[in-house]
Length: 378
Ligand SMILES: Cc1cc2nc3c(=O)[nH]c(=O)nc-3n(C[C@H](O)[C@H](O)[C@H](O)COP(=O)(O)OP(=O)(O)OC[C@H]3O[C@@H](n4cnc5c(N)ncnc54)[C@H](O)[C@@H]3O)c2cc1C
Image (cartoon, rainbow, N blue to C red; front, side):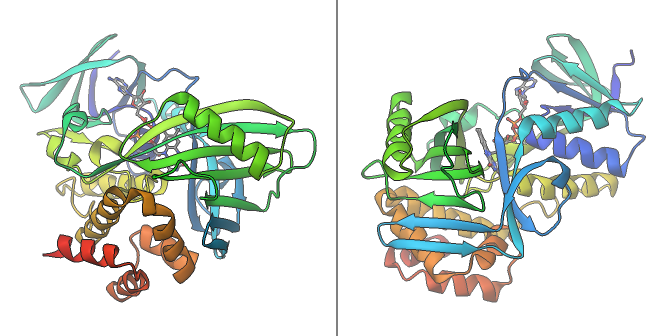
């Protein structure tokens, strides 16, 4: 086997898959290797919103045109049209990327753990991994630099959660509408809520989620999940068929400081998770397309990856949530009550004009929000 490639991708997760698929589409002759160590049992549900038909519709498990936001201040029905909120099983997406990769004779997939990357002569990087050594001109690396976990300067909120996919014998869910955030049950003093994706009348993912600086013990999630299912969904007889758990960093940390000559960080490791929401599937699709465009056109790889204005909004939202964590429900209620879901989606997709962004900012009458905004601005 030839061990020399044009591009090596480390990690066939969300970012690695998106980038590999985009590269194969734009440059089918590229010599590409993907090195990944994921056990096949790991899975996540990746949800995102997009307008009408999308690229991954064949892989979508379920989509919704209606959503619900609930807090002590009231219930808000979210009519998403023309957007739909969609869910994909990460295993299906990665299997699709893998199958595409293996159709290309110039591409390889190595199941190994990368230990180190060293510069060799001739503009080539030597990737040392548990199956040997691989050489590549460019490395796209989805390993998060350990410096991030030690950093004390950035504002970081952990989106941490545990979800149970439950099945019931009786019809228990309204499958046409998902619950974006339900604050009617929460861990006192924190921004914590329940998220519900009803796949059918008898099956749903119920997830207890925090946007908070600190993590909690496992049994805390279990306690809130049980309470929500029995007291808020009024379900006593159910079976847990799947569990998903995770921590997503929502952070102002500058991940791009870890790019090196010939080694470019992608995915969470490159700051591709939207700091103010923790969503990254759709953002990753966009950034993967831009990255490949930059590569093909010989531009610096980071060209246009991070529009400045949106970085400021993300920092503002994170700062507000960090400083006033107990007031998260009020913050999100104000946001959803005063803006159409479509406008918020467009804003979070970083596709709004300055005028539209100012309208959203003005709708947030909270003084804390405005103060924090100006603190960031000057
Ligand atoms: C449970 C969960 C649910 C989520 N749900 C959503 C959602 O609904 N919507 C959304 O937009 N975002 C969601 N996210 C956030 C985000 O989409 C994911 O975290 C996403 O997987 C990040 O992509 P990534 O490529 O950076 O990392 P990953 O997808 O984790 O991929 C990294 C890959 O690199 C491999 N790897 C790591 N180290 C090495 C090494 N040394 N050698 C070789 N391989 C290595 C890993 O095994 C893995 O396969 C969720 C996150 C979690 C944890």
